[in-house]
Image (cartoon, rainbow, N blue to C red; front, side, top):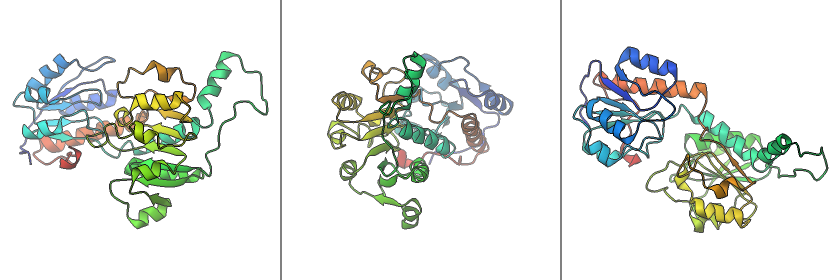
Length: 332
């Protein structure tokens, strides 16, 4: 366990422009170095900040790798991530240097579940295609065969990763008449399964062949990188829709594009990509793909709650206590 000691008025480096109220509060509480502007710090700026600060506040767009951590100054003892995912931080390297890493779990659960449910509805009902048709001026009015999609009621929803977000999606999906199937490393307690009316599939491949819609809610780590590869995507039946509002690297994008182009999948709803903000032009050309710009957690309330958690973690650490949201060994 990294040593904790009291650090009055810690020097805090914030890598991206956060909501004004969050940055103002940080400035009031700490010796805070803010980074303004629409983009984050460059690698050189990150290295310079890490050489001098006590606390680094990065976001998902900052790749805090082992080389950067190795070059950090001796003062850096806390990386207080603005967000729940920590796959962009070299956790083992941080632990080796005695640097605590914290995140902000729980505050974005409902927002991400809302966005996921929106995609689950949007793709089968062709909402993005319909919106573009109206804006183009080419719509000729209602017709019995116009813009036909598929209803989602009565379909089987497969949830890959049944943590906070997966369970929140399941609660929403039940209200739309979907049956709930899930694959998770560990089975949920029976009382939770009963509440969600969810069926556990210990074998992921078996679940993939039995569902109509797949939604992904597992963290991106060494175990989940490329988890939905070409072989697993091939197990999905041609009428299936794939939804991903988790992390882009979990899905093999080339295999997904091949399946969509070959009509071996009915469509996809994507809020994340492996190389974002760059998006494969083949995806952009597909009409049966609904795309949103990594906005699953983008609410005013969610961003403020995230900032409050970051501040709470820094304050607890600065007072010499273990931060409430310290990332433990299981994330590595």
